[in-house]
Image 1: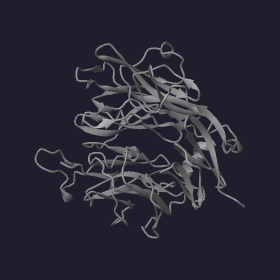
Image 2: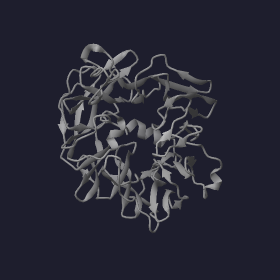
Image 3: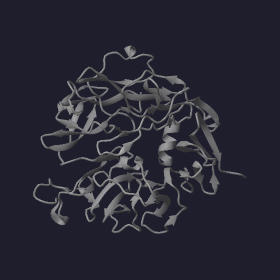
Image 4: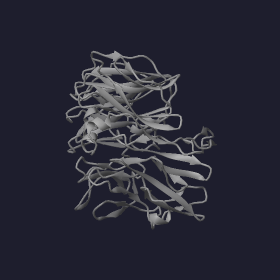
Length: 453
């Protein structure tokens, strides 16, 4: 999260800043609960262990996660344990209120889905939907929006018998679409007056903008719409789409659709009529500067990854994987984590969600200016997350995993080791850093003092 977004989130909270930077015990995990479920073999024959991410509210007053208990999986907010559900997504927050996408199997071929927000029983949730997609909460009032699939059924093999999808917004009832980006949370603009998602009509995918007047389909369609990122002022979108141009052979073989080949989708980043990353094997994971004037993104060549800014020619370095870049608040420099030793699935290696996937190898922080000069690299860790700039852009903080657990690093300041660390939040003067941290069964709000004078 960038410093600008952190300050925006903190500005909408009711607690004074002094309380935001006061350490406290937030909650304790219930007896018998765990953050990991029972391991099983996935469809590829690989052992998979379900794990719950832990998320703290931006003001540090609340924590939410999925708890694995003897009678099933439960949503938990603070010390409140919800009912057991068959399916639960990780939580999202509006202020200090957590919300979960939840569902239950009902009979041989039916499911019922809801948004859980603290109800003590399933009965209190009322009538559910046949299926709902990933949820997003309005920045205005916290209302949940999502795709629905009326009449959805589960076939014998476990897959869904697909039906048309309908978007549920705070305003008008949506139209029916043959498919939608329903497993990716919709995007709100900063004031909550418009929503952005993607829907399919015929054989093409389109950006769908939703407001009080209804749904508005963009004119240009694509063979796939892998990701979209909103410009900070809400005036534009960076799209990750297949490269269908003939300049580098957008398709591979007579049976491959345009932009696709045996190694996955050859994607580019498109902003309006501009295309970025077309001279590489693939491009994606775009990120805007705080003022919306510059765009950074990943590129790939021969299985190696690098970072470009705007219409740059060549990355300053190539790595086995890189995370989505994060601009400093002034837009003059950016940072990312570079990995050596991991392998990623080529069909999904450019998706924003790959930053959350498991990785092997070691990682280090890379800081560079917009032109790819003045490159700085840090020490190696098992994993790096949560790159966050101070409000003045002079300091970069991040969470790093080592042999003793997770620690926060900010310049020469290093925190104690914890089992888990959440998002990082700088104070307005940049002298303190607050974050959620788990130590065994306790969830804390911790503060790292950065100014020792």
